[in-house]
Amino acid sequence: MNSNFFSFHRYFPVSERDRKWGLFVTTIGETRVPPHTPYPPTGHPKAYTFDWQHGRVLDGFALVYISGGRGNFESDGKINLAVEPGNVFLLFPGVWHRYQPDSKTGWHEFWIGFDGNTARNWQKHKFISAAKPVVKINSEDTVLATFNRIMQAVRANRPALQQILAGAAANLAGLCYSAQQAPPEAGNPGSNTIEQTIARMEGDLGVQLDMKAMAQELGVSYSWFRSAFAMHTGLAPHQYLLEMRLVRARNLLVGTNLSVKEIAVQTGFEDEHYFSRLFRQKLNVTPSQWRNRGQKP
Image (cartoon, rainbow, N blue to C red; front, side):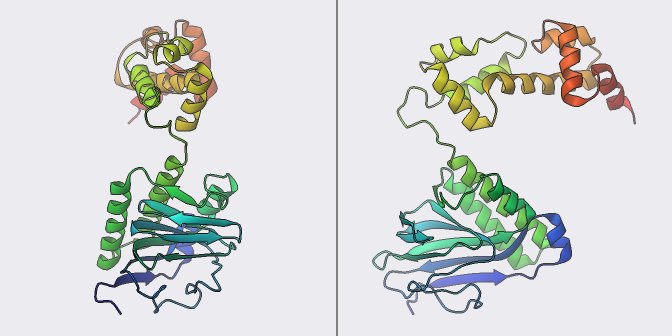
């Protein structure tokens, strides 16, 4: 085998404690496959090994990151995609798949296998989907750093290792979900619209903001603005602003001696009664009750 070949992997037992945690890791690994090197390498358990001719079906999930080289990925007999540096592909339980590097380039792969109720809920609620298994990651430095920390934790056999690895798996899945949220195209005049809007909100919580006027100032249509904002944050602009105001109000209630009326004005609620009613609706306590609770030892 090529002297530049490198492989490191671990497979983990799963305890009842790990299952109760809601997310557990089954395997992690890294393989550097030089050009013209047979793939996949040997030495993996039977449940995980495969060849290009037959493919494979896993019982759980896996996330594979390609940091260098190129190749191909196929899934469920329908999806056939080229894989490039910076791509992540997700593998799903019960879904047939196969992948391999291009013989001319080889590739450098990292992977983490995982499962549990948390991962199943991600799939159920379509945060991850077998219909969109390949993602172009925007923050490769973060992904690579996360995998490096995973490898360090495994080699050091850290206490509660499964919980550390589960946190890393959730972080990587979150980065994939973020990358799928259809950022505006490069060069679009609204490419920084969402970031600018959030910064404006944070600086002007006490000011009444006209979202339609803000979209016009930023050179985008309101329908695009509203849709892109919701995709980016999970909330419509007005709802996001409202949540930010309530967070500021909660902090002021426990951190200052300002009256409820003064806090309402400072956080953009002109009507104290509306503020109190909304606060109770969202948090099931009145502003005064929140303040008193925060002052208890």
